Amino acid sequence: MTGRGTGVPPPDGTRRPARPPTVASPAAVPPALHHRRDRRTGRRTVPRLRSRQAGAACAAIAYAWIAGAYPSFSWQSSAAVLAPGLLLLGYAAVTGPRRPPRPARRLDRRAVAVWSVPLLSFSALEIVNDLLGSTWEHPTLSVLADPLLAGHPGRSAAMLAWLAAGVALVRR
Image 1 (tube, rainbow, N blue to C red):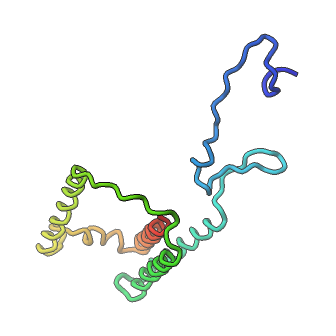
Image 2 (image 1 turned 90 degrees about the vertical axis):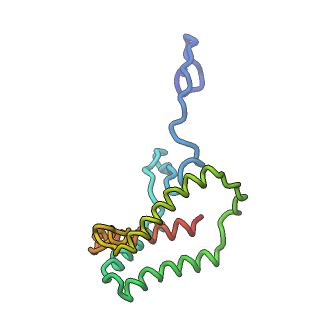
Image 3 (image 1 turned 180 degrees about the horizontal axis):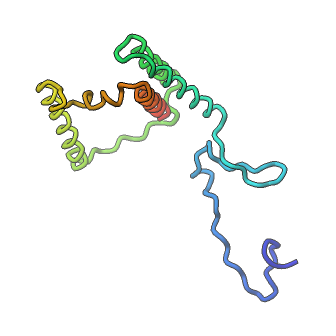
């Protein structure tokens, strides 16, 4: 046998160029999305989340939905926000960093100036609007966020974002 896939070149002496690999190296693919091969057929299977990650995501969504049902500024909503924060803080304190910290880089003065302008502008706008009464004519960020957080779905989405930010900080 000669030809493709046999390791023997075709009889006419031509060689087909090697195809580039279609799958990225395992280091470039997130661990939860590695392609697996079926043991019987040898075919690649569809990437799937690990069951523990999927369970944690479902639990976070359910917790956010339940916590979003509490009325704003109640002790239940405060406890619902504080509890996962304390839990993640305790987990981070016990486990410590996953990898050694990177050496500190020198701050670039130009980058500091570029980031300082919008930060100081936004802070000044918030302070001025708060002093003017925080109304629709002079809204602060909290006034602008009120319509989004007035209903159950909006509060649940904000709680899910809070949980995701906490997990992202702990995993760093």
